[in-house]
Length: 180
Image (cartoon, rainbow, N blue to C red):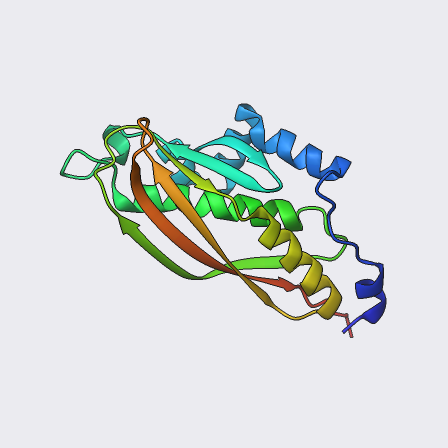
């Protein structure tokens, strides 16, 4: 483990210019759609959209429509799960985006429940951004993997809950491989 890199690494501050740049890019519809097309094409096809984003919370929406529907004329659960995961994952991505040391992030567990048919726009709201920032700080200090369990709730246009999910993410400082 490279102690020097850990000692020099500083966690992202919730008001840093780099963090503001990340938020600005994520909230730009054109840049976000290009990102989805390049890195998450299924999310692009499903038309996921970031509704709001800051260091504490994220809202990601997905419309109901022909491309997203199941045979019962509601949004397919896998499409809802994509939006739910993104509402938690964008917070983790934000927390690691500007760390001086490369950090990896991976979903290690998920649980979800669906309480009502999603027949219009569904927006998932996650308010666990602080957990991701603390996890990045901890993995930078220790070099050990840290898990974050984030909860997100999906609501329809009327504000009625249609789904609830938890995603457990593993966040870990990447090992630097030296050439021999």
